[in-house]
Length: 394
Image 1 (cartoon, rainbow, N blue to C red):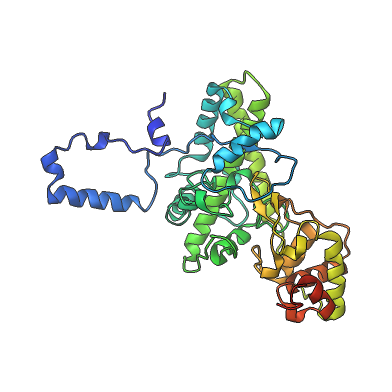
Image 2 (image 1 turned 60 degrees about the vertical axis):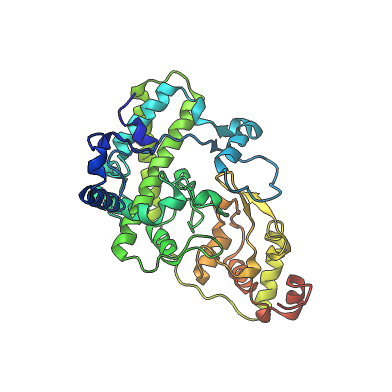
């Protein structure tokens, strides 16, 4: 058993205080030392702390039936664990992987990605314009601990102490998928920064608009670090679940390969150019065309244009409410180009399909209608009556 196992579990040892007598501990000087030591630790993680091994179930495919309501708060891990039986072969239980292989994986992850206090990534894992040097990642880990850990958790699991009680749940970075990504599974660094700066309407993700650009850059790099580490762990655990008798050297090799694949995927996402500005069509004819397209392509999920409460599983196995577009809460970007990207590309992590067969003109019409749904005064009278049948207007 390794000496840091207690720290891995997030518990602080009392050994550091063994040499203090009761009388000394009660003196003003000792109290001052204790205070300054505690307050300075708020700047970052304990150097002895290691990332814990993943214990919660990995959902590879959600149950086939659609959920009736939201995933309950308070014990997300237990809900996901239930999928091991419901989803059968579509879920992986890390605890079922032999202990020796899990121990070898933990060693490999420590070597590749360091600790919360001293995070690292492999040399080839830098992403786009991000600096992912040890110094930048260490700075990012300090910002993350102050602003993000309580919701997103030590490993980026989305199961922090406060996050367990939020709905929708904070994002779990470990899958390598993000709903904020406009062109695939992974966002660009700029998209992560935008969410940090602006927050996510309709969720508990607040706007950090007073945080410095340097801190935003650092914590963005650290989020990518957590995602690469989590995805590496996930891919190896999935592989070990399917194989037996893998020795420590083979596990380390699998981890290096998985880390390289995650880094390459992040680099490819960062290279996607920013969507150019677009102008959405206006006028009643365009909104009627958009309404017709919405009725054919979107109402099956956005029932009642979002008025009807309905749920779908997302990529993490969590039941999330289908967005009520009449509320005007554009979580993943308010610009017309963001709406166009969502209509064209969908949101893979939310199981929102893409629309590759629509023409560019149809995409613009559908995006224009979607943006107008929260503005009944902009809708033609017949469309307004369809969207807001109770009053014909909002």
